[in-house]
Image (cartoon, rainbow, N blue to C red; front, side, top):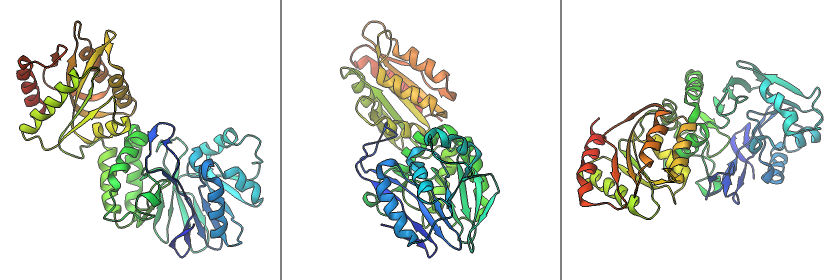
Length: 396
């Protein structure tokens, strides 16, 4: 089903309600949307396509929106297959269609569509280029590494609509999460935050540069490639993206992440969280890395100023769930944060050493307090060390 954004702009995206893992790694219990748009003017432009999983439904939506018209342009803002999978089929269906994408994206086309007839069918677009469609004009904005190197955005000048590619995206199918438009009652930030830090988190400087380009445009509507459209809640989203891209602290508080084998480390971590609460820490979030969603743990590590990790020693190193979590933080560019360490070891504690080494490999991570070592199970004699660590954590 198509939906109207304005008299000339239609939403033709598709929900995928059966997808369990986005990019084969991120849990999406509420599915995923693949957003696509059509501008109907003297010339007709199709903006992105969909994933191959929903190709048939997307093509039906396109035909409904076109109402017998032949599209003039296909604009590929982002070559990732969840947005461009139908490009070759569209070129074959409409021989007069011209595909517009960045030069970097055009180099990728033969990789994704080997054998497709592309000669004379494509045009490279670059920063500042425009595409007049009649009453509507698209101005292109380069957005490299948000989150692939070939990404472009486009700004429709008459209606002040930003087609933002993966920026401002959110996990969840639209029909399961409130519909096409984000409203003040929509909990946009939760799944948008998890999406941002796991998809784009490494590329904060690049996101900041694009935000600076967008700021003077007077954007009224943002149309992302995933999740609801932003209009009434746009100011909040822009404010959050400004904080996130600068690796700023969104929520005062402490995030305690633990990885426990037989329950001893879990007991110590939960006790430490209770101590923080008793000392009036504004917010204490806790995650069991052996059971909770890793992407949510990454999200919370970016959300708060201070991370406290508690882990068991394992094979003279670190229990793998904690190692995996810290490795993810490193590759996602976690930085400008404080960290504290609690380790557990029955005979030769090693977890603290490894966690400290992993933090040392990250940018601008300050270790606070003295490492606390638990031997197998939390003892009363360990409580003063936990109290002292809590005081260090809460002392800004």
